[in-house]
Amino acid sequence: MENNLDGKYELNNLISKTKNQINECWKLLMLSEFNEGMLLLDVIFQQLDVLINSISKINDKNLNIDIDINIMFNIFVNLEYAMKSKDFILVSDVLQYEIKPLISEWSIKINNLYTR
Image 1 (tube, one colour):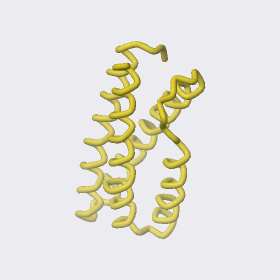
Image 2 (tube, one colour):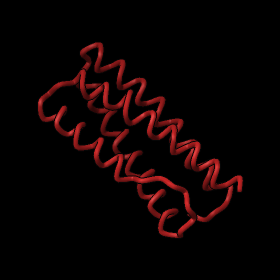
Image 3 (cartoon, rainbow, N blue to C red):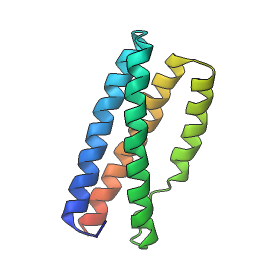
Image 4 (cartoon, one colour):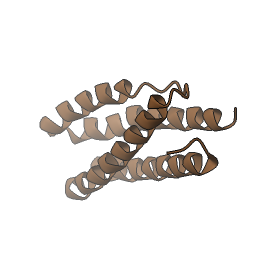
């Protein structure tokens, strides 16, 4: 990804889409619709993978985006524990209250990078 507005909009669109899907997944899991929720969680994981890889590329270019992707990896440890325990309420809470705020913060930092 190059340092241009297209990259900013692509990333922010993906973040927005991911946040919306987190909201939907949270609702599904809270309503005990586990199969549908877990299918959507798989889509969310794929999108997070794209986000993490894109941010890694920005970090590799030394553009000082100030995003530590290791924070997400630490959250993934909690999410993995919740999934192994089949604690779907915890899964939904990790999505809603840890991952969603983190990617919202990423969006702000991405905007700041491209407005310098």
